[in-house]
Every structure is written in structure tokens, then in C-alpha cells.
Image (cartoon, rainbow, N blue to C red; front, side, top):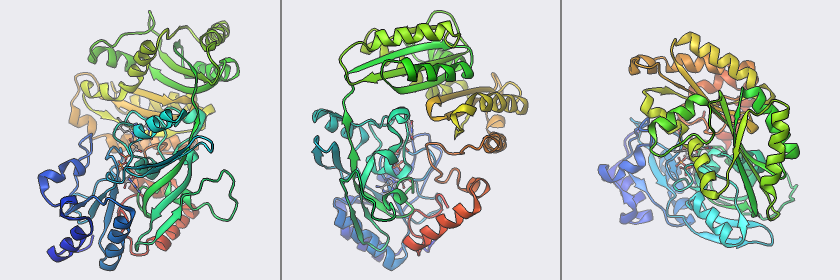
Length: 472
Ligand code: FAD
């Protein structure tokens, strides 16, 4: 960490955005320094809110001249502490929230140009207003920003059909360390003119530069969406069901979420008016969504597909949402799984992926290992089965000591991540590395891959001032 920044230097930074947008007051800084789960608490001499790309460039130029470390932040919803300065840190926090213009929507080219601080929800709304669809969907969409989505290569529930953020970005505008602006706002579906540089900045968690705007892909709006809540015996049956749904679901599978019974129990216990969608209890559930661009017919196709699934023994019982409200109720159960764990004491979490085919075997092994390590622990693995991405969460034993359970976080991570490695998986499927998993990276990345990552970092950010101590 560099030395304390002098009041004169802080005044020079403040002058670049104007006093009103330079926050030095500790109370006013709090919303930027504490993330929503209260896990990371940062410190900064100054929060800067630039309002233009040129202001961002001026900040990075002065930061380069004075070796001042920088932390970029969007909506502050990241889950690995990448957007929060270090507790003992001296970094300036640059919030991109004021870069909030939708610059253009082009329904013919199916593109939208937005600035980094536009929230994901506003992008979805702007697309809809133009008769198009932007498919990235996260529970945090009301607060998270496109810059943060790009910084983390966010995933969510639509990945199965539309891919991660990386698959939705066509062009970028980036301010590089030193203050140069890369004008890469391309609208080209085909462009084979050398290295694909935009992909370096997607998922870089603010360690290579500041994304100030992006060109994103739009899609036709799905006209019919069918949503089913399905009881299954085990993850292997769920996987077989996924294959049947893809072949006979009557449209594109746009979500396929696996949930354990214990998770549904937690939500019903702690959330007023949450109800079991199906009578009877099953060990696992699938939330299936199928979308088509044709009018109607989707529920009939879903029903026929579910009949096939019963006959083959992949599904035990199911209900198809008869209204948008009922579909929203199904989704609420899924979305509240993680949050409802809070009412059951401490929880240890993982965000991992393995090849889709191996998810059932991975779950068997990881659940057994965790239960052996912490007797009474309650694994609650759920997530995007169609992407091989499991949020492998664990709740503490009933009546156990919360702190004693949380003290086992690191060792539990080691156990689960070792099994992930055995299954050729990833220790961070969606959320990134940030501060949370930085120390783990050297143990899981191919050494040649790490060497290339360090070389890229050293080339673009030779002084190491972009989000120091994150990722690498
Ligand atoms: P921030 O949290 O502010 O920043 C995240 C990272 O990006 C940091 O490293 C930061 O330095 C960097 N960054 C931010 N803006 C820029 C920029 N303009 N240029 C360069 N770097 C930048 N994530 C998923 O992938 N899938 C989910 O399903 C999901 N569900 C969530 C549910 C909840 C309730 C919450 C709170 C979070 C969830 N997340 C999920 C995590 C989070 O919402 C995403 O990571 C999101 O993309 C972060 O966006 P943000 O604007 O809040 O970024």
C-alpha cells in the first residue's frame, strides 16, 4: 500500500470532479465502503463520482502521475469484496454511478449502447421499450450496474440460453491506467482483426482499467414463457429431465434451477406467505422455464414433456404456473433460498462449477464430505444446473454454536474446493475472485495461465494501481 495521500493531492483529485462529487466525510462514505452482507469494510480518503468519461480519464492520469491506487465501483453488490477498498487501505474509490446514460438503442442491429453506471434493470427496461429483450437477469438487477456486470462477467439465471455477460458484450469504451481512452464501442457481429481485447476487461474486476460504456446485444422478446415447478428424486433425475426439456419442451430452456427440499423448508419457515407449490415433499426440485417467440402453446408443450418425464421416472410431480403471479411465486422461492439461510444461523458458501454431466457425482461427494467434517451441518446446494454452477451453501447444525461453525469456513472451503478440482471444475463460477478468493487462485490455476495473467496485468497496469490486492 502506498503512503498516506497528502491533503494537497486529495484536493487536486476533488477538483477534477468538483467538490460536490468528492466525498471525504466518513458517514457519507459508508454506503460505498460496506457491502450488503457486511463482510468487507473498507477505508478511503476520498470517494470520487466522475460525471463524464473525460473526468474518469483525468483521474486515472493523475493517479498514474502520483502512484495513487484506485478501486472502481458500480452498484456495490459484488459478493467477493472486489469493489471495496482494503480496511487499512489508502485507495481512492471511483464510483461510476453518475455515468448513467443510455446512449442509443438500435432495434435493427439489435444493440444498445449504455454507460457503465446504468443499472441492469434500466438496460432491461430500455430494451423492452424498444421492443427487444436484454437477457441478463440477476436478483441484484435493481442495484448492480453494467460496469459491474462486465467487471465480474456476471451470470444469473439466463446463462443456459444466452450465455454470461461476456457473450452479451459487443464493444467497450475503457479508460486505461495512465488516462488513455480506448474507443472500442464496436457494433460488429463479425470482426477478425486480431486479439479480442474487450474480453480482457470482462471479468477483470477493475484490475486492468475502468469500463465507461458498452455496446450490448439485444434479442427478440420471448412472447410465451412457461414456468414449471417439478419434484424430483435426485440431481441425476434432474439432469435427465433437463435433456428431455431441451428436446421436447416446446421452446428454448431459459432457466433450469435445482433446489433441495431443505432450502424450500427454510423459505417457507421464514418468509411470510411463501407456500409449497406442490403437495407432498420431494428431496429435490427443479424450476424450469421455457420461452418461445411464438404466441401461445408453450404450456401445452410443457405438459406433454412432463408426461414423458413422469413415464421415464425423471419427474415425480409438477405444477405449471397458470399465471404470471404464480410463476413469480415459484421464482421467489428460488431467489430467497440464500437469504433465508440467515434465519437458520451461520452459513458457509461456495460458488463452484463442474462439467454439467458431473454435477450429480460432485454433489454426492461434496455433501458426504461436509457432513463428515461437521456432524449435523445442513448442506443446501442449489443453482444453475444447466450451467453446471452450484451455489454450495451449508447451514450450521441446529442448536450449534454459530462462531464455532464459522471458524470452520476455511477448512470447509478447502474440502469442497479439493473435490471441485477432482471434478475439473472452477472455484468461482459467477462471482469472481476479488479479495475473497485471491489467496486460493495460485493453488487452482495452471501456472502458465497465471503467468499470462500477470504479464497482461504488468503490461496494462505497470504501476499496479488498479484495484490492488484483488484477483492477483
Ligand atoms: P460492484 O459490486 O460495484 O463491483 C464488482 C467488481 O467489478 C469490482 O471488482 C469492481 O472493482 C468492478 N467494477 C465495477 N464497475 C466497474 C467498471 N465500470 N469498470 C471496471 N470494473 C468495475 N452475480 C452473478 O453473477 N449471478 C447472480 O445470480 C448473482 N446474484 C446476486 C444476488 C444478490 C442478492 C446480490 C447482492 C448479488 C448477486 N450477484 C450475482 C453478484 C453481483 O450482483 C454481480 O457481481 C454484479 O455484476 C456486480 O455489479 P455491481 O455494479 O454491483 O459491481
